[in-house]
Image (cartoon, rainbow, N blue to C red):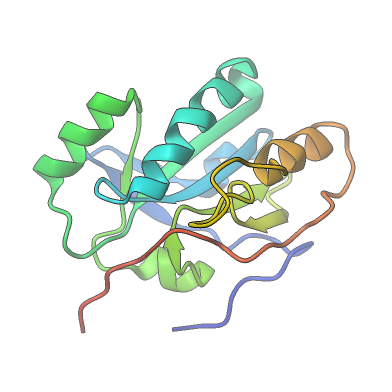
Length: 171
């Protein structure tokens, strides 16, 4: 696995297909704030993030784009489609061989990356500060990062450790 990408640097471009086979390229979204969310159909931490994330972006219109990326080697497309529909996700990209997860150094689901309108990585890490022992969040890292980027400011913190389920990789 490669080292993690660095904040304040251009985010690596990639092309992935969604669950319907439609191709999406990250650089095509320049001019919008992009949230990359390494996502899982089976991880309860990813489900908790989805429940809070969708309302966060619904109020932003086209200014903020969410790209959930399914990167677990053990989650087949039928399961991904079923769970995405249940959770109301209009789009999920499939990183079948974890190439994009490896490119970004993604370790967990959820593992969040926020890019500004110029494609510069501004935040990476956890959705919020909920952990196994701390059930109620006291810090909303993603929400704070998106608000900072919308205001033209740098998020603080700009990086936190991701927390969730490990991304399943096969050799």
